[in-house]
Length: 316
Length: 237
Image (cartoon, rainbow over the protein chains, first blue to last red):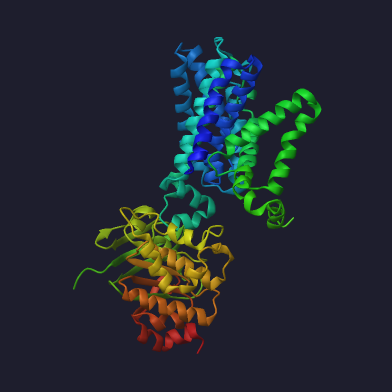
């Protein structure tokens, strides 16, 4: 973002977002927390999926580990929330680094399927451990403070976006993009592909785990099925693909727009809401596979031809 | 005589249980063009993969005075041993210019990239015309030029090229061979791995013949070209 106008716009949007919980109704604040957490999750997925090109279904695992890490630290060991959150994040990062070394050797569909399996396995493990409360889950101490959770979630979105902005313009990020575009070529150009992929996966895990921890304390109840929900991972992907994978603001934009529309739909006509995300992904992939971010960048030049060009490029 | 740029002693490599190369000994001196020729499955690509550190190997390899056996590929690359991989391996959805800039990925310090680009554009003028085009949309010959140019932007000391002539028209191959001679003049040493024995030996100073994973003949390019055994086996005469 070099244009000062755009930068001022982003800062203004941030100030408005930060001010919302002091003026809006509780239900809007709650909607806002969900929306912001989804934006953070999407931004986390953007690092491994959007920039590095590895379609991960394992981010919901990191989210779950963050939730459980926070909950266990607070309940079993009576640690404060902040330390619990840090602990959950560390666990997720260690998990990502260890498993990443092994499974990031797989490419394309194989990587996706393997991470999908990871989520199923975690649900099974957590359902059978005493410390995690087996399949009944854990109930966290109640804290009435939606404003706090809202601001925390907003802070997470900002931090995640700053990390992605740094990635987009750093040597590390160029290495990730090179891996996405052609991994053999990246290796031939001296990119340490294994280390970069593991780092990207771990960063992605850290952001997901932070979102999981915040969500767990806010919602005060977690169980294996909801903590390791693949559906949440699919949502991250849809939101990112809609907004623009491999762009800085795309995932956040995607999360805001789609959360908004889906919220309106589910209150007005609840039967249609379920179909919504499915329809969005089909339309987005066909008409704007590079997301809203790319659409905004190029619409001036191409106008309505933009969609036709994409359809043609897809050879549909 | 000074130390050779690359010295390989008793190199062996393979995939899993299957050994491919064994007892490989050779040297490449500064500013030489050396060709490794051999038929399919002789172990040519395996040799390059072992040298660039992608494939684990036994034996000792010294490059520019340093022991590089066991170093990770990115470190070996940073020392100036750069490979142009078989099948070009371009970033197809990136422009030619961005591909070339990727060549500078590992370099540090203040770089005059504009000058580096100008230097490779002088070698391959067609790339300058196509610099804003997607690399994947060019012809095979142009893609090979782009891959070589990208490797040159990495400022290699030793450029290893795998099957440069693969699938290219003879006229293009001639053009690329001329470029090899020119970059040697600029101080870059070249290791060329080729199935096309005739082309490779035409520009090389020396050559090695690989067969079933071992060096079976070595000598000056002229001697090898005249060797009736080599001619019989690879030129079909």
